[in-house]
Image (cartoon, rainbow, N blue to C red):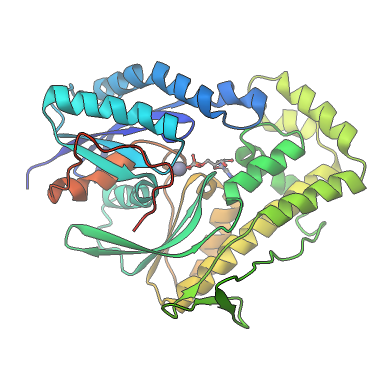
Amino acid sequence: MPDAYILGIESSCDETAAAVVRSGEQLISNVVASQIATHQPYGGVVPELASREHLRAIVPVVRQALAEAKHTYESVDAIAVTQGPGLAGALLVGISYAKALAFALDKPLIAVNHLEGHIHAVLLEERQKGNHDLQFPVLALVVSGGHTHLYLAAQKGDSWTYENIGHTRDDAAGEAFDKVAKLLGLGYPGGPAVDRLAPHGDPRAVKFPPAQIKHRDRRGRHDGRVVDEDDNRPRFDFSYSGIKTAILRYVEAHDMRATVEARRKALLNIAKPKLEDYLANCDKLTLDLVASFQRAIVEDLVGKTLTAARAYDVATLFVTGGVAANQELRQTFEREGAKQGLPVYFPSRPLSTDNAAMIAAAAYPKFLLKDFAAMDFSAEAGLLLK
Ligand code: KG4
Ligand code: ZN
């Protein structure tokens, strides 16, 4: 099979990204234009602003990805684009541009699920390192600002299948990082700030009650697993809205509002706050709260994922998505995975958060199968991964 160079385009949330990847195994270029500065004053992604920024960035970002790869519009073999899940208006910008390119250049168009992209970020980098014999079945934790999912991933020839065995019932883990950071005046996005501050606090200072998951249609089990009554397969769901409320109550009970507001204003005046800036604006109470929050999330994610790995007897674990950039999460997964004899793989930090290399990589098996998208396919904000 000759090499295939796929141009990937990603615009599902607040990053406009384009990349060229060779045959799903070599990253040739990877350009990400972040909209953080646009959304920062609002403490979260504003969908209308996201679409506008994607419109502004999409042409130069694709041009740069091609130039850095020493490719032209004509020289790539296919165009791949994120179909969903994500913000409908944001997705549409990438999809419309990808369709126009594919039509004008007469190239195949490939629609990719963003979540499948996060899983293929790991595969791309492992292949690039020369690791071609990952053991299956694989359990993948996709943990980001919009998602907390557990998938069993299997490969038959060039075809991939995914079975969801757990998801969040309310907030995603990254969303909890962002909301808690906002509550504590730490700015947006919250994950990276909490990650850097947590080692400076006491993770045992504040105790949070374990997440309560109500099982409407499933029977609870003594070991925390739930069994889907239809097919008797255990499920491992997550819930992070409770811990966010607990932190809100803690802030109120400890009269932290004035210090939070002062911190928010001080940090807003610094274009790119450094660790010293955060530390200069955080007291011990805040640092302990941040450290305890992160520990609680990490223990929940690692604990449930490893229990699921045992229940499904998987051979390999992937941890991917924006939150997979978290230092404590990586270290804990590596330590606890090693205890179970389970190899754990993460993408590098640049490929953990949203990017288009993962979209181009996930498109390669579809390219081989000639699984091309029709010109009239549309964005699917709630697209599931199956
Ligand atoms: O994968 P991603 O770029 O976008 C989505 O698909 O949602 O993930 C972004 C999320 C944000 O919630 C951000 O706060 C979180 O990932 N994040 C982190 C870290 N870096 C990004 N969370 C914890 N620790 C980090 N180092
Ligand atoms: Zn993502």
